[in-house]
Length: 192
Image (cartoon, rainbow, N blue to C red):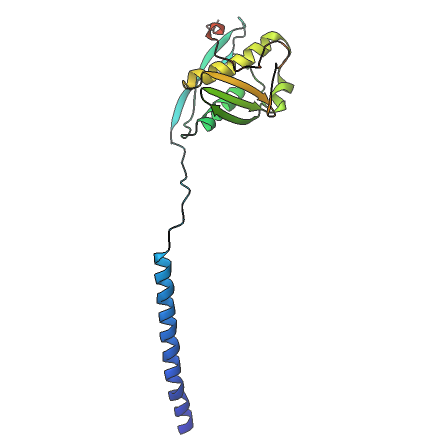
């Protein structure tokens, strides 16, 4: 039995030494962890809560001109391109009242780039495929977008159109789209 007590007594200093080494190593690791440079955090810009009012231009079913429709949409963050995309998607959702849609409901907005006072809007081929033929449909589609963007975003003075990343000469052969277009509020009419 005496041998057994000596064995436990002989291990005791070893156990104390192991615990001391583990405590020192743990303290060094904690010290190293606390002194390290914090990793840069990507700040998330949460979208502001609430709703904003926007004006969307749709076609008048009677006069062929454009008519404003006010709409409440979710407030967008500080990213102008993202805000423009939200408004264009709402335009593609169509009117709520008796007005007529101006762009296809399945319009896909691939990208929106801001170049000075110009918004470069790149749409998918679905836009062209869903756009009715004729000069009136082309003019109302183009100017419903241009007028909607310029009225809701005062820093946007012109809009350049692209389909699948390519500059367009025209959509349906009627309106020259080689240069960015400014709004044309002379197309606006009243309901009726």
